Image 1 (cartoon, rainbow, N blue to C red):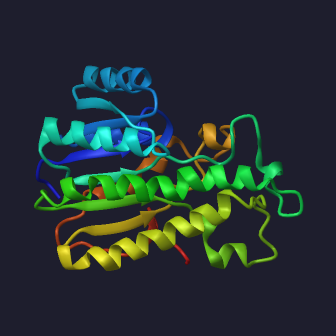
Image 2 (cartoon, rainbow, N blue to C red; image 1 turned 45 degrees about the vertical axis):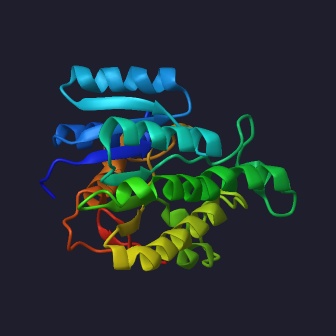
Amino acid sequence: MTDHMIALITGGNKGIGREIAAQLAALGHTVIIGARSLERGERTAAELRADGGAVTAVALDVTDPGSVAAAAERVLADHGRLDALINNAGISHQPGADFAGQLPRTADVDHVRSVFETNVFGVITVTSAFLPLLRRSELPRIVNVSSSAGSLAAISDFGNTDPIALGYVPSKTALTAVTMMYARDLVSENILVNAVCPGFVATDLNGHRGLLTPAQGARSAVIMATIPADGPTGTFTDVNGPVAW
């Protein structure tokens, strides 16, 4: 896709989200950073503007429907439409907790619920709020940042040494399924909806233990955000191609 695009990235002030914003801005697109803290979002936007990007920020907490609705109203007022929604915001665990708190034998259901609130219900809330703006676009697309950690093929492998996390892992399984529901529902409106896996990226989410840089992790989302009108919908991919369901 070479046309000028208006794109919103949730959780766009740091990590993979920031790099998605930077790469889209470098391609000449207008980028809106959605961040829980408007101050942090505006700080990142200013940094990217200094590099020549057309980047602004909007306060957006994906777990707060009021915040999401206000963000949608702001984007509508400022831009009149949205061409690409990248649902990137996500958490692996509650602040102050870790994966150990998600072992099924000892799991705190409130901990699990909080992860789903951001990673699944937050995506639904944001997508529903911004659908009217996407419908104003000639080339609308939605990209959900999921993870191969939630692949049923991977989690059903008893030789898998990835952490067992009753909140995070199933939340990504659910997010991929949610993506497919939107893809099937919106295909008649020519809204392309795809899930991507960034890979094991060094971010705050994993204590910076990942093997890839945020810039590398951003590539799969940028690719899907810029596909042409006849591009795919209802897929789950990384930079190397399809990811196992």
